[in-house]
Length: 527
Image (cartoon, rainbow, N blue to C red; front, side, top):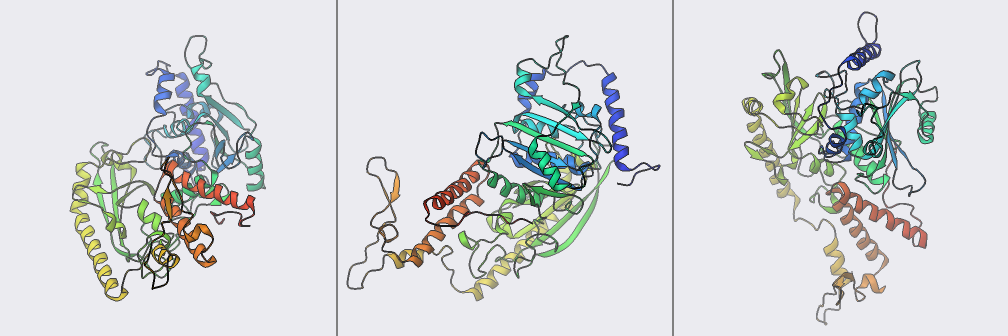
């Protein structure tokens, strides 16, 4: 946090905030939008998921020199504790001056306008992300040696005209002294035993666009996504979700300190990194760097049993990363923002999961990469594609493909026959075996109701009539749960949450009925 002229970085930022706030307060308030219509429209700005929206708040915390950022969940008591009603992002950064708080709630309200050094530069992230999840949000902040101040925007109150002043203009209220919700006070007490000296808290309420049905589903998705998105920034800022530390995950699997590098004996193989300099014609005087990182992975990289394909229960913890980050991975100032499987000269198919390519670029080239205000997508210009082609990217992709093909051929030559990855074929054969002198009849596992045509278990099958052995029943049950978990890992948003909620509810039913003492089917290990 070093600064200039004896002033540290945090103090420099607070001075800039106060100058910006004073300027805006003295300027004319002639508007360019109809406030209510603008806010309702901005709710549809197009975040791919809540994950990307919450990442905007994480970006702000990182840029505020936070050493720790937490996503904390509050519950209002009227709903199940499985689902949060008040997600809050809490950091220990430099905080915001009281006169800056109201501006931070406004679209475009940032003293960092056109700043290319950090993660944000537009001033849209905080309000856009908050209203994309809920209809009410509050910004609470405190500078070192100062008091807590807060500003709240409630869309229901906005619709009711409660933010209009005597002149009929919409005006957000000034920052006021604040009291924190009990769940945040408890979090601060546990996390900062010597006191929370400065930082910012964003609390989102009246949730009407939450992607997940349970806290568990939310945590699983966020921990993995943030682990990849911020893996290059993890040394500066520790991120936690619901008390669980986000561990860095390099999607190229080349960084020894990152999660899954030492999962088993398989290792990613790298090609030489390429760095190129590019001038941005849309920003005179702006020159940026593009870096290309390459890796190829053994065809067994995503598998538990290395003699079989990474399918179903045989997929290891690396496999979801291979699927989710499949194609060209674009990283801006060290923060991953997009993955594209179609490029001008090729399309990445399933067999290309084992080749990894990252395009890292500096924010000085934002216009050339078509970076959106939400920082979740790029629209690459022809000039950049040309520069990447000149840097040898198409040839490198073909070289990586060739290495993976060779590794697959070598594996087939020594690996023998491919086996049933889920074990379902073997289970089915053993369960319906009959003496050799009788004709073999296959007993269906499921049948359809004659009236509703709904699927239901077949009473004639050994699994459901009690004649299957404990071992056979256990294998079949494990295969079924594995299929559901695999389907969940390949789905996104609400569908993924539905699968995870199904398994969690099933676990609760088994516990209540005394069938098993296992407390959870799904679990997550803390740091």
